[in-house]
Length: 266
Image 1 (tube, rainbow, N blue to C red):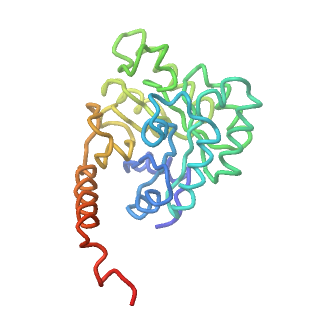
Image 2 (cartoon, rainbow, N blue to C red):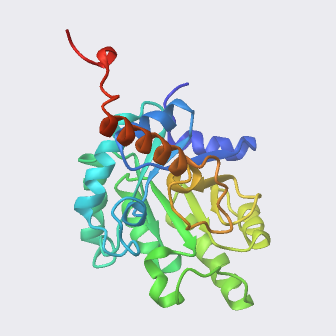
Image 3 (cartoon, rainbow, N blue to C red):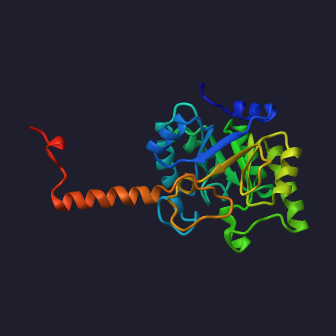
């Protein structure tokens, strides 16, 4: 399979071909997902929750993101790599937004960045696309806005929220984004936005009618403990398999069964 670009992502929508996206935070997972023909690898600021043990994404820094973006880009050959712009990396000024997005592309190897926000982020998205940095938008439940939203709550149930999200979606497209993530919105609203926009929509907790879907890889693999949102399908319980393997290792070390001659040099 040839290298996927943002032009392919648009073509997939035009052809009615669903887009697959998963988060990745390190080289080995990137390599595995890439071998499974995942279209887009998102190096999300969700690394804060999934890897760093943080309560939310807000403390994640540019240094954190750059470190993980570099690891992911080393592991993939085909997938499009999109890097999240962390909190306060684009809100202070357009100049800082350009500098930070440029670093994720130039130093990290990402091929696009993701920016949370709709109408309030239109100027940032426009500024980045004007210097040829592809941008993926993100509206609905935006984790960097949890304090304003009062937590991780579905957005768009009320009519005024619905109208705002429709306006946000149009603003993201107008600003030049090549795609937009719809998170935590009613399926009917996601369907309406998807049919309205010419750019692809990627859903997470947004129903089946988006042009593509994204999940956090830890959730897919069963590595998130008891945390399991309604929209997550867990495809394997890897935590239990890991525990079984590690407990067996500990028992064999303590009993002297490992290493045997088979695993020793003569």
